[in-house]
Amino acid sequence: MGNDERTAGSGIESAVSVCNRALCLVGGTRMISSLLEASTEASLCSSVYGPALRSLLAEHPWSWCRSVEALPPASDVSVPGFQYSYGFPAACVYLHRVFNECTENGAFRQFTVGGKRMIFTDLFQAYAEYTKLPAEDVFPPLFAEALSWRIAMELSVALSGGNINKREHLANFYREAVGHAAAADANECMEVPREWGGEYLRARA
Image (tube, rainbow, N blue to C red):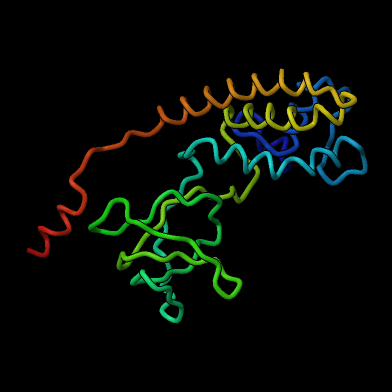
């Protein structure tokens, strides 16, 4: 099943449809069918799509692409000042917190050791909560709309003859779209207050 068939009526958007929406927003008249096709529009979209996506992912802890993972111990690597070392989650774009059964939000540092990104903390059997880069180019509608505005903002200078004012104009719409998307995302999850570690400690009392 192709992207167009898969996304029709499903509430998600493909990378190509997001870029085509961006081209419309910036006043383009030519749409694309693939980010790899031989056209100026596809080349520009391909160059800005990844950075635009990462920038938007950094704007808010989006619940739909947030993940929790037990960190793999890396006992062969150590840094002074920290008791434990762990490997970095492969799919992580932005790390929000490191925690375990007893500590909701532990102190940690990130370092690159031997070419590998690592996490160092004093937490035993630590977990990481992070934003992951989506495995497929599928997004909730309001997130896709915000991403389209971001891409349009980045495309505007190249496609409008260097018009900086147009970029600033689109940036205002982008910020508004991010606000709507973030508010909708926040409404889809509810934080339940709890005494962190209480159940864990009582079970061991």
